[in-house]
Image (cartoon, rainbow, N blue to C red; front, side, top):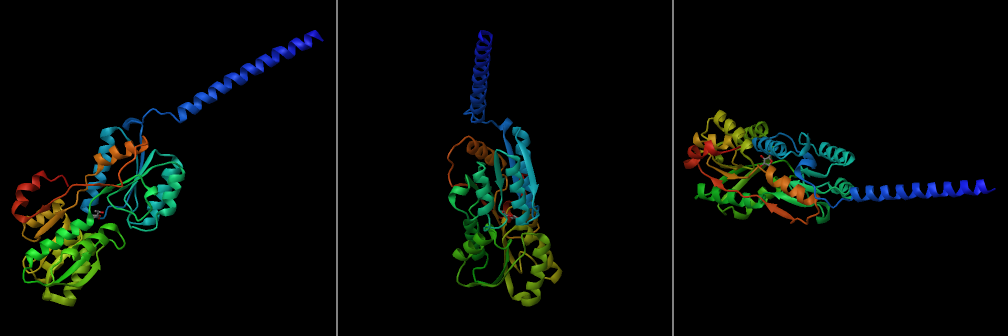
Length: 328
Ligand code: GYE
């Protein structure tokens, strides 16, 4: 009997010890999971859902995101959605499943993102919108890093007014339908456009050279030399259109004044050749600012709703001098 009670006591003491030590280890685990220790670039995992490779601008933007990650030692998971929203949504879902620390993405169009962004929020993963904005409630994203596209459109409108003081008929190459830059550049241009200028046709060239050329061919077929100006929402479409204008037998930059947006190297080359009149800058080198914001978001900092990028306007007279300095 005595032996038995001794055994019971020993067992109870042993169990108590086990329970106690496992309780300590649970507390330790919890403490390390919810660690208040700040993340650093070296242990940050980022999922980035890029739009595609539709333009020179996008190529420079992708290079900036990738090169900066490498420089900082950030673990980057990168995907290219080939301009398709469903691919971007699938990429974001896979980053959520993998449990990345933070997600960056450039929404190809403005609408249709609530569900997937809510999923990221529920998983506790902050989302940063880069370059393009989505039309979603403020609580679904940590911040938006990118340009003021309305302002770019306004600047382009002012340049067209200057190039066509007597007014006239112009055509417009719109970016990807439903995208923030296409919507805003459309609006901004009309805000500042003079009354004697008339936009006789406006069609999407999807931000690519090939489509820009194709749509310009159709414009020329329909209106011929009635057209005195072209406003293109990006340089690549303008460069495609320049080819179409030359093939049609008119002089781009002279017979048809051209204003576009981005300020990529191809635009500087076209300005040097006298085929493009103005390019309004849109800065794609967003990598350094993106990772800075990503780390701050992961470490719990409240970020502003919008972090704008700085940009300028460029003209043919300085194109040759500035081209060697251009990084994209
Ligand atoms: O202007 C265009 C690109 O979203 C600002 O997308 C970006 C635009 C850029 O395809 O060239």
